[in-house]
Length: 242
Image (cartoon, rainbow, N blue to C red):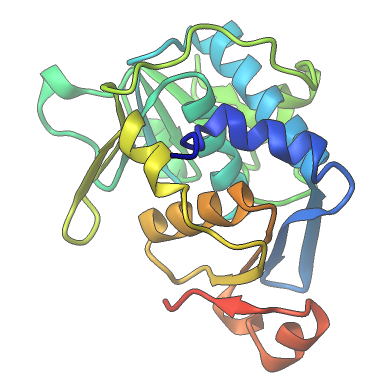
């Protein structure tokens, strides 16, 4: 039986076997196109992982609420959270105080001003150097801070297979342990996969993991730019249905 593809294993594949080839391509609104090689994607994940550990005290088992749309930076955040052993929470913020997140990551000014505890503001613009709005006291500005962290992640404790990797209240709901997450990454193909940004985030994450584990490329595109011209230009070989 082949070894299961944990997130650290997938990241190792990105920075070695896919170091110079495209791993993630983002087409956003307003003609925004971002291409990340495997090594550059791993660098972004490493920087974010180091920020999580050094500034936000991340360790296996902490709860990280991700209030972000489907976006290339969202994929970076999820990979970093899983590399450091966090439980990623998607959907509405837990109402139960006993299940409150340890860290909230958001692109919403409203959430930024109302969330309790440790909050991180993520500006969606690719070239954004800081959060464009007013930053509440104590909030962390991802765009302003992340570039100062190291391009490599030396690693801490990995989450045990029984730890919860994902808890989503989106759609029908979904909960995965780290063991189940590694199983989700199996069975992919070395394809160039087009993923519309209108797809459900859990499905986006699963498809991206399977594609990267097999050495493929993820093309993530806003609905208005996921055209036949893009399909031809990027040599798309498969598409995820929204």
